[in-house]
Length: 349
Image 1 (cartoon, rainbow, N blue to C red):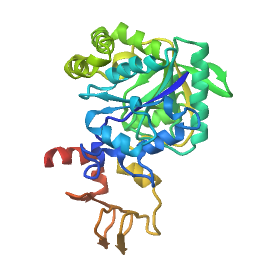
Image 2 (cartoon, helix red, strand yellow):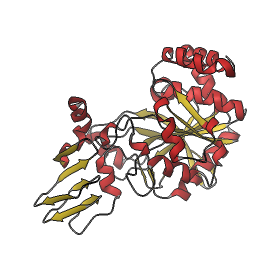
Image 3 (spheres, rainbow, N blue to C red):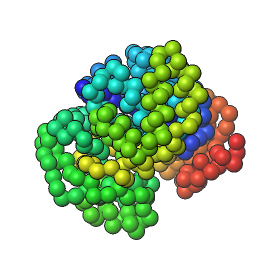
Image 4 (cartoon, rainbow, N blue to C red):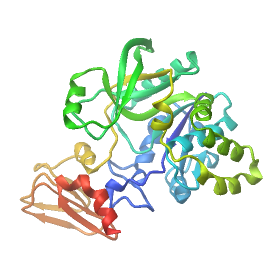
């Protein structure tokens, strides 16, 4: 039984000041008329019904999830009382999903990615699901074929060993590679065995729980005790004990150590929408290559990213800058400094 787990607890600090701790980027309309989390759920619904789509998020975002996904069953909102990285949140979710679907296969997905070819994306997830049905202890990750030398992504090196499922290749993973420098990224771009790591996985709930037990025994024991405490005591025990789980990412804690890991090399127009540069890549531009969101007036300006809120924003004679207006802050800078927004935010607040 294929289920989806969408991780929606991130802060999206690189989209500050529009993205805030109270309303981070997954709940914003960055690329169109739907928020990022709405886009994620809607592209899944042709493959997985809404009753088998689960959201794991922080306590403070429950209201936003309910508001933006009104048809999502309330039981499908899995709450972390405190953020403790991806390994414990995925294991907690696997425990809870097994309550409803004992033999569940879970596809784990971020809530804030762009995928242009949604049909091909669903084909990839379906092929991974078929592979896991035939290879129950397997982990399948989704790797995107690079189209540029990207230093902001991790990479997957695929082996030559190949299976064919539903017409798609599935290869063994040789290794995971951290974010490279530019020279390495250019080398990876020329080598077809290297793929971008999008942080998307397909596995049996039982498989990820067994791996958590093997590599993160403390986390496994704490979570099992919480989940086994019964409906009446669950909330209190979760609040008291969850903070004691290991603060580890799924990549570091499990993926770099586990065996039987495979990858589907994919091309479906993926972007992790990590900075305002991503918005520039995919938003429509005017005749002077400006991205304008809101009530924007350009006078002799080009190559800018302008995001307005309520007031008209007028720019005159400017080039290669960004402007982001929120209810509380107007941030203006050179486009080259977009990479530093997280640092700017931390110094400002």
